[in-house]
Image (tube, rainbow over all chains, first blue to last red; front, side, top):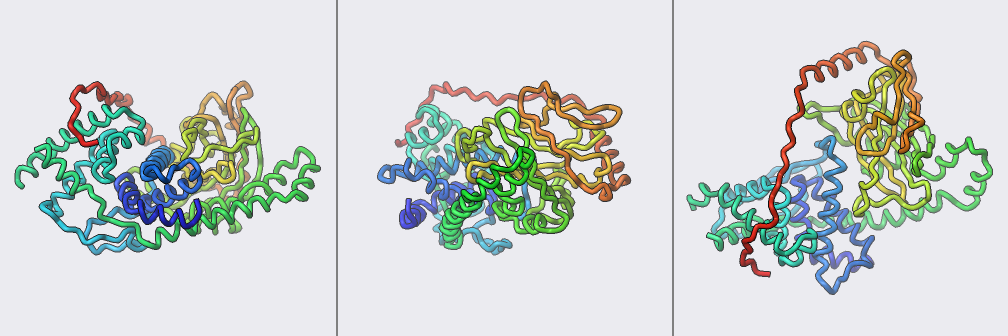
Amino acid sequence: MNREQLEQCINEYGKDIYAFCSQMTRSSQEAEDLYQDTFLKAVEISDKIDFENNPKSYLVSIALRLWKNRKRKYAWRARIAGTKQLVEEGTSEETENGRSGQENPVEEGYLNKELKKQVRDAVERLDEKYRIPVYLYYTLQLPIAEIADIMKLSKGAIKSRLHKARNILKQELEVVLDEM
Amino acid sequence: MKCDMDQILQQALSPEREPDCRLNRQILQRLEEAEMMRKQNKKRIPVVAFAACATLLLGSMGVFAAWKYLTPAEVAEEFQDEGLSAAFHGEDAIEINETQEYGGYRITLLGIVSGKNLSHYIGSDYQGGIEDDRSYVVTAIENADGTPRPMVSDEAYGEDPFFVSPLIGGLNPWMYNAITLGGGYTEYIVDGIQYRITECDNVEIFADRGLYLSVNDGAFFENSAYHMDPVTGVITRNEEYSGVNALFRLPIDVNKANPDAAAAYIQSMEAENEGEGEPEENTTDVIMEEESVLMEYDE
C-alpha cells in the first residue's frame, strides 16, 4: 500500500474505525494509539487485504485483534497519565494533548443527549461478547455475515448475541424508555 | 418495541467523533519514521562490523549486543516516553548488555534506571496512589534460531509469554517479584526482536541485599525455576528446570541501599498479606450459544 492508498483508506474508513476504537478503549489516548496502530498494521499486511472487497472489515478485524492483545499486555496495571477520558459531546473540556476528535454537528433526532448517554453507558456495561457485536452492527453498520467473519463465529451465534444484548439493554433501560 | 430499540441503538451508537487531521498526519509520519528506522537498524550491523564482532571471543557477547540491539533509550523512544529515554541517557542509568540463552530463546538484559518521575507516564496503584519512584529494566528477547518474534497484532503473539522480574536477595521471590512490587510492562517488536520495559517500585533501597533480574517462561513467576538459599539469601537458577530461567545480577551500587526504607517496605508488604482469606470462588460465565431464537435482522 503506498501513501496515496493509505490516505484514501483513512478518508473512507477513518471515521468508522476511530468510532470503533473510541468505544472499545473508552480513553482518548488509547483510542488514538489503537487507531494509528490499526492503519500502520494494515500497511504492513496490505498485500493480504482485498481493497475491492470491503476493506473496512479487515480494518475492524485488525483493530479488534490489536485491542485484545493490548488488554492482555496491560493486565497488571492501568496506565493513567497521558490518557484522558472521552468527553461528552458539547462539553468544553480540553485535554493536554488537544482535542482528540472533532465533533460533527449532530442532529438530535428524538434522542436527547441524556438518553444517548444512558444508552451508551448501558452498552458499555455489557459483557464483551455482546458489546462487540453491538458496536459492529449499530456503529459500523456491518452486516451479520461480516460480523461473523470478524469474530470467527457463526451467523447464528451473532444473531443470538445481538438478541441477548437487546434483551439485556431493554431491561436495563426499561424505566428510562418508558419516560419517552 | 423491537424497531424502537433498533432505532434507539442506532442513534445512540452512531459515530459522532472524527479523528482530526493531526492524528491522520501522525499515521503518515509514523509510517515514514518506521521505514527510516528499518533502514537505520540495518545499517547498525554493517558487514564489516559484523565480521569484526565474529572474531571476538565467546565471552564478548556483550559487545555484539551493543551493535545489534536498540539501546534502552531508543526502546523508551519507541514508546514515545521522552522522559524515560532522557533518564536512560543520564548518569544514573546502567547499561548492561548481558545475554543468556535457554530453552531456545536468547535473553539480553540491556539496562536499568531508577528514580522519581522519570517516565512521561505515571502509574497508579489499585488504591489510586501515584507511583512515582520506580525502577525500569529493559530486556530483549529473541528466538535463538533467528526467526522473528511475532508482532503484537499477530495471532501467535502471547503463545510463548515471558515473565521478567527483579528479585531481591533474601526475600522469597514468590512474594517479592514484579507483580507484588507494583509492576507492569510494555513491549514492542522491532526487527523481530521483542523489547520489553518492565517497571516496578524502586528496588535500589534493597541494593545491599543483592539484586537480580529473572526471566522465565510463562505469564507469572515460576517458583520451580529458581532457588533461594535460606541461609545466605543468594538466588540461583534451578539447573534441572527444563524451560527458560535466565538470571542476571543487577549491578546497582550498594551505597544506594536504604535499610530503613527497605524495612518499612517489607513491613507494609507483610501487613498487606496478613489476614488474606481464601481466594474467591471463580464464577464461570456460561452463556449457551444454542439459543434457538433467530431474529429477523437484515443481513
